[in-house]
Length: 68
Image (cartoon, rainbow, N blue to C red; front, side):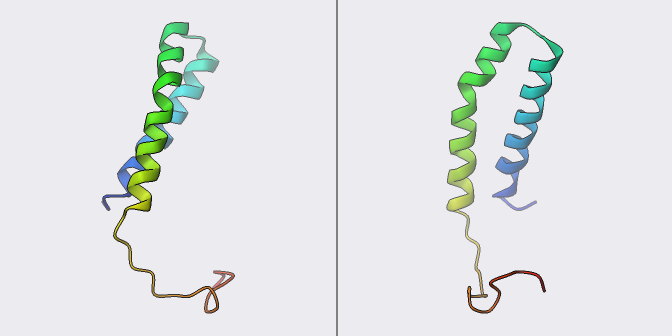
């Protein structure tokens, strides 16, 4: 798996667990803890994606619509 995809999958899984925990009505302390660490997970994900070593060969003029 590519190095920058793991944080995306982990943040998505965290979000799904968080929303499920809210709807399931589990302990409020656990929900508040998850809410408090969520900015760190999002910042880590954004950092890993933006610093990924990905080479893009297409320009905006070549594929502006990406429906090819």
